[in-house]
Image (cartoon, rainbow, N blue to C red):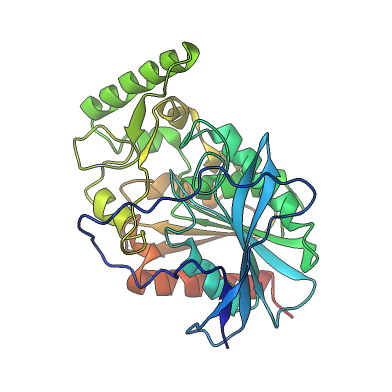
Length: 348
């Protein structure tokens, strides 16, 4: 029994904190897609799930570039069968615990397409690390469209799964694409104004000043003015909750670090971004995992929006924003998600 994947080492169980790890560099410009997905050689690794599956590196077109993705395919899965399209949050990449969720889903018989947004990770696009709401939602549409072309996939049984900033994207994607079979939104960003209240007025002013400088730099053709996606309380960063630094770093594989700076212009988009308002237009089953002690994506607005979804389900966890990616909270969370999937998009 084993998991077939590329020769890249598998992430080990994640520590709560790391100290001074070496930098892990990934390719910035993957081969562009021409006629078919670019696929890597696969190898076998044992899994604790006791099921055979393959994990293949592929790319798919989005906009004027390509997005890199992992395609998980259980060997004993229904064919054609369901697939879960998965995207990360604010500045996140696949290696930051999305593989842990995908392996659990694949072990239950679900294919998965786990992608990086353009400008991030192994995906293409310049400038690097650019966070742009419109582009990311286009990437979601492209990922869903690509998933439907896979020969092992039933195109009417596509599930979208997003977390944090990507949790808002998954709500919008499901609202706009009525063929989506089900949606999962985990500790989602749903309300830009509410999220803005999580930082102090002084920090907010510093962030906005840097955002304006970045917009001016872009118009003058200069290099982006960067801002960290996370930092300590009081620092000039997009997430400055007390658990932000330890929380984000707990998602990283041991010995790896990833760029945490993004062009600061995204700070001008966040306050006017309200993906939760689209929940009322999601007609498929919608599972929303809400962390009641979330100091990054405030839980109360999310609960109000989720309650408006015609087929919405809300799961509450007495946990912080980053807790449900690891440890006991991860186990509870992923178990609830598997139960939701089994009820609404069962594997034959």
